[in-house]
Amino acid sequence: MTKADLSGGAPRLIRHSNVVAALQALFDQGQLSRAALARHLGLNRSSSGHIIAELLASDLVREVPDTAPQTDTPVRAGRPGVRLELQPDAACFVGVEIGVEHITTLRMNLKGTYSHCRIEPFDGRSVPVAIAVEQAVAQAFDGMPQDLRDSVEGFGLAVPAQIEEAGLIHTAPLLGWENEDLRSLVDLALRSEFPVMIENDANAFAFGESYCDRANRAGVTLFMVLESGVGGGIVIDGKLYRGGHGLAGEIGHMHIRDGAELEEVLGRDHLLQRYRVANGGVPVSIRSFLDAVQRSDPQAVAIASDWAQDLAQAIVSACRLLDPNRVVLGGGLAALYPMVATQVLNRMGELQARTFPCPKIVVHKSAESGAAFGAACMLHQRFLSLENEMHLRGPK
Image (cartoon, rainbow, N blue to C red; front, side):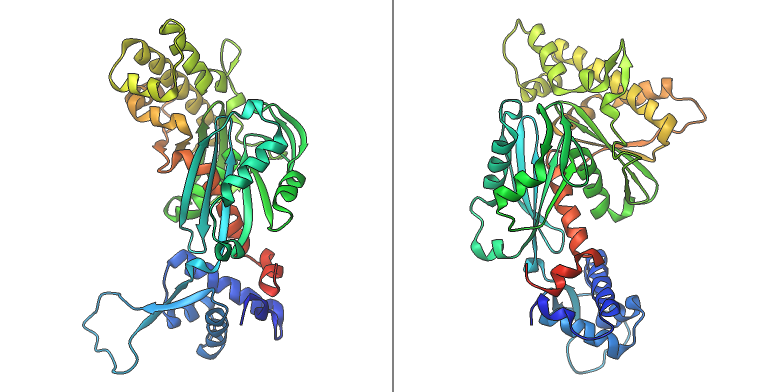
């Protein structure tokens, strides 16, 4: 039996709903006994048994030995205990980010674990959009075995752009793209072989972090992607908030001081330009800047201190509107935050009204690959949803 066989029987919609609910439960919980899964689904033993049998036969789910600690409760003799879990290799989701200085690609399995993360240098400002897409696709599938390619259930792409749901880019100022049909270009590069999802990089980053970090889904989280520019995403109780026109969270366009936008003073280009001038015009990299801050080079520390002040002001301003519980930092410049965290928090304490609590600020554990990871997570969620009925009903 394959995924195509899950469509038989009536009522089909209820049956499919139970299949999806079982897959989602196993993703959320990791492993469940047959009895626990039946309780979660609200089904009797016979009905849940049919659902489990179909999932096992479809290779979406597998049985594993029960390794839970033994209790004092006597165990009946007979078949050793087993639990159910998602079959990791049953599906693969490709996540990609086209940034200004890099292309990031990775692969996610059905259990939500990612691998083969690859970050390659890329000059996004000088490469036409079609060539950028071709390069990203080539990098994503480079060296992928055919059997793994056959299990790919989608290609997710994150870019720093204002994007319509249909995949049309209005503008990507950091890349110099305007009015581009990105979805058509991706479909062309993939030869329409896989389902495609396209998302703003900060939204993808925000979605991915909240999707897999179930402990932090409650409340309001502001995500900031600190790269060449500054992107933002907002998640409320685990759901991505897009706003009235899909532009919510665009914190980088906030005016911070002297009429400058936030991304002009917090972005990579501004930091490197200042540090280059301070070093007599010698070319510098963000890595060399971070190293200089780490070793307390006075010029680098002064630049980092200004960056900390501006970051603090931006977060305090966001608190007036969003009242976030957490602020999660991602992108290549997130590595600077731990070096100036004390300055940021002190400045926030000075600026923040006593009636507004300061949010917790954390650096994402995979800050540089967060957008690509989020793009893969969006496909993963789609696969474990009623929206994916056609993919469970029949071959791609």
